[in-house]
View 1: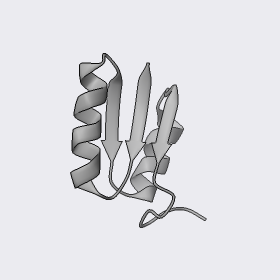
View 2: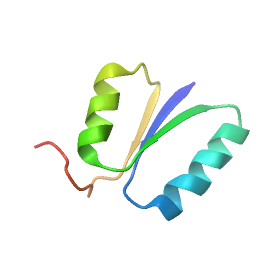
View 3: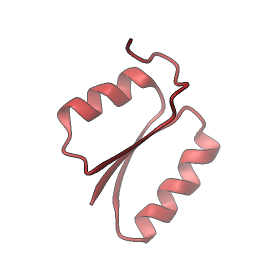
View 4: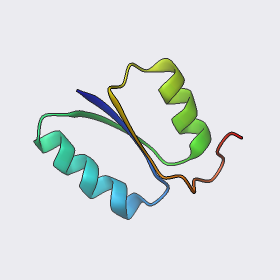
Length: 59
């Protein structure tokens, strides 16, 4: 399972991504809305985990 984790708080994304990887998931991390939107559009993800108060998010 491929997961895209988008959150601007590195202190949350790093431990969460490590835990998910240890459980066998493929995880990509982005720290702003624009980058997350671009990755989501190009990638083949089974799950998106998004912070809804992201900087640089698209309207």
